[in-house]
Length: 436
Image (cartoon, rainbow, N blue to C red):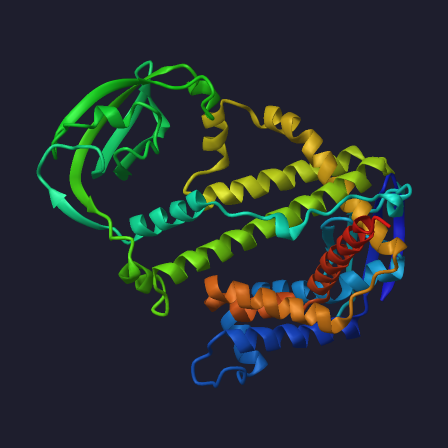
């Protein structure tokens, strides 16, 4: 494989790669095998269809796309290693020339590590909180028991007027200056009167309403409301009450405990809740201590971050938020409208956080280098198996494809980097904890 750095400046590198025709043919065979194992071909057992059948059924374009993917997955990490370039983010890869039985050429553009001055990070000492100081109040245990009661509650539909404690299902639409609000509308929305899950004052207007009744009322939004455009505004709501339910909570007794765990009585359930809260607090304590150590190390380090890196991190942050919004049934444009901001205004707000994230990543990676941290292959493979098991719970049909992705050199390198950084953080925490 021929590898040449064609450009390297401002913490960026461009690399030209040419893969010999003989190697491309090897990856062609590998791509055919992968397609053969995951696709069904009538008249043939899985994985046993002849190449000609696969080519005729799948089509040249799809096969070539698979060959390109397999070739890049296998050659890209080796090309970076050969060029002695360490990227700090995902590369931009551009295919220059691809044709069967010919050399395959492509370019890689990556952001590379800028120079990082760590300072004397080993001298940082921070007192670690004592685990024995963790306390769990009776109120915290009672709150969990109340949540369990609500989860196990039974509902009886009523034709009577709404009163406090009832569960209702409503349709509602909010209007600001007679303009419908996208983020203030819902159908068959469940609500328990008295829990105040919507804006303050909303639920009070539902009391005494009867099923199928419709009503209009105004609610003034608080001045510190999360949606900037609604702060202090009077919003008119049109509401239709669909259903009313009486809520019956189970008694806090041994029977309730057995519904949570057949081996529990109420005393045992309370003990288990106390252990869970204690563990959660310990975990939070550990995370807070790690953050304190990392912040101390990062604050004394010096690193110049190229503007391109900051912009890329901002785009990553937008993608993260977009992904969460999609899971919630919304999207980024609706979110911007809800908070009354443009994408540029949001990026300006996030800029310091983006810089901090980049600097933290660079510092931790540099410490991993300084400490000569390595990750054995068995640990990489164990992490792959762990992640595959997690994905299998949510995407069982995609498991074959995921196995292929995880076993690529590119993905293994990414996992190796993640594990190195984890070990570097553990090293920092251990060092900072030793007060001497």
